[in-house]
Amino acid sequence: MNTALLAIIFVPIIEIYLFIKIGSQIGAFNTISLIFVTAIIGIIYARYEGINTLKSGLSQLIKNEVPAYELISGAAIALGAFMLIIPGFATDFLGFLLIVPLTRKLIFGKLSKKFNKEKKKQEPFIEGDFEEILKNVDQNLKTKQNINFDEEAQKDFLKGAKIAYETIITDFSDDDNKLIKSKALLSKKIHDQFDDALKERSNKGHFAEITFIGINSADIKDHKKMNDILKVTVDFVAEVITCIKDKDKKIVSGNPEQIKKIYDTWVFSRDIKSKNPNWQLVDILT
Image: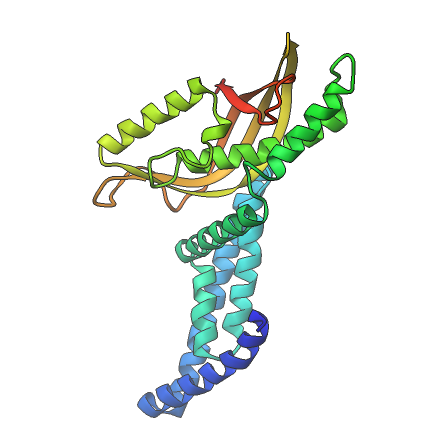
């Protein structure tokens, strides 16, 4: 059954139950007063958080950065304020969850992880779209005598490069300290570098946590062909929430409540005469 339909059916039932239960304990007048008080406090706090989010968004725009998180937060705060206006205890509780920064970020993190898992199920990486996209790019290149990496081919390549970037970042920064999903996408040099770093992290008893928010931009900085090897350099700007914790789950570095903007320049390489359609990450410049 549709989730929205279930909410329409069950939320009023829950609210009626809570009205009866709480009213029998503190009385009808106190119950109604409590609803008004929580609504007023919530709306005032929502206004405060909304102003802070607006200031943060304007600051991002001044820096010529896309305020992605601020836009989502603004929508969540507006929804939270609306839920606080609706009389009820369950809706007030949900409204406060959306307004308070800590719980709002936790909700965003859970939704982002769920979305990424669903996306990976629908778009298998190694055998799926990324491989097919880059394979098509390679076939297009083979049909052109001068190996013209034109605008259309570059757009197709970037679609796969974005998937590759997210997969490698999340594989390196998750909590198992192993390279699994991204192994086939890394050259031996990069794989060994990452593997050494993960072994060092594991030996210290540390592990990473990451929520990949999204890629703000991915631009081809350079592309060149040397013999049969085509190399493409890509500038990435992305947003993540990440931190390192020890065996007692104490934070060693990073902040699990703060979105961090990361800037990377990666070099992908492909043997255009090889039957293997996969590109590999061969160098990290920043």
